[in-house]
Image (cartoon, rainbow, N blue to C red; front, side, top):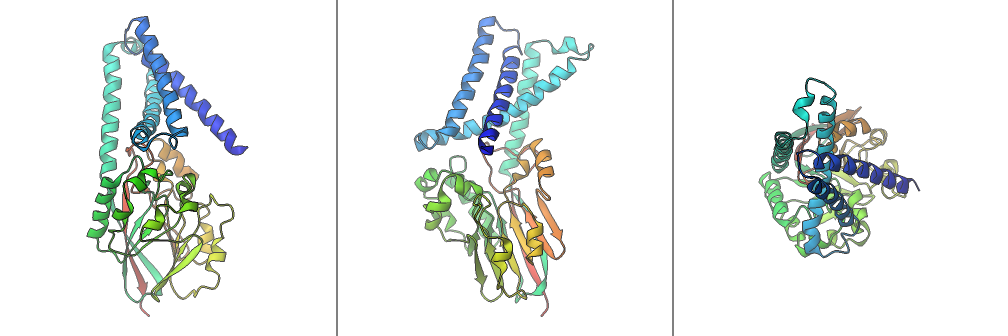
Length: 366
């Protein structure tokens, strides 16, 4: 019932935004009444198509959805920025001295178009630039030798991010010559059809290091968490409420995503482990960070937040989590929450970054 209420509220907000921006778009330039109706109704029709593409994407062909889904998800960001631009214009119109400059005109329409193109061209460029984040994690436990680890999250492979882009990421990873790779969930962006059709498992299998991963909420959205159609074809060792041992050096725990209400607690997952050895935890959603501290985890890698992906959503997300992005520490437990190497929807980063983390894990002398 709560989920249905949230969906209805989201749809009502979207409708309000569509109505507000549609009216402004239709009245932005001095056009004949017929053309203003065409623009307003066309904007509404586009909204309906976007909703259909979201809801029924699994029923459409892969070829159609590969085009439609990125357009639909990008449109959500365009809507957000049009709402902000028109709100600013409406507020400025309250100033009598500025009102003559803000009447419907072609220069005003041109300025709005220029701002939109500029913002999203910049956001696309920022997304395409993958940020290498160096991170040193010094443990207060002995480690036979330092380990170089690549930390990733939120690949979101699917309709938006395809094999060619994944191949570039794999090349970046291999150029670091890591000892192992950790992925903190959301490898697949829901529907696995495009991932299977493009044989993306072959690209993941090119990574020249052991790979450990946990599930994210998007693996549940598309059923991959249960069916393992894609992950079973890869060399990824999926840890779903389970523990792996790297040689005799350390433990790696992969916690199931909180989408599963029956998942184990961190205390249950650490029960019976040798606490003299380092314990690393992969937990997709960075809620309740105190649980890792209380369970004696040495380092936790999470993702999920994307740090809001675009401004001003990042400001909201920053207040939703104890740490929405970056390094964090609670007592002896150290954390890194990644904003993700991939993206949900449109390939834009505005006020955030796409990243991969290069972790130097060191221990104290025995």
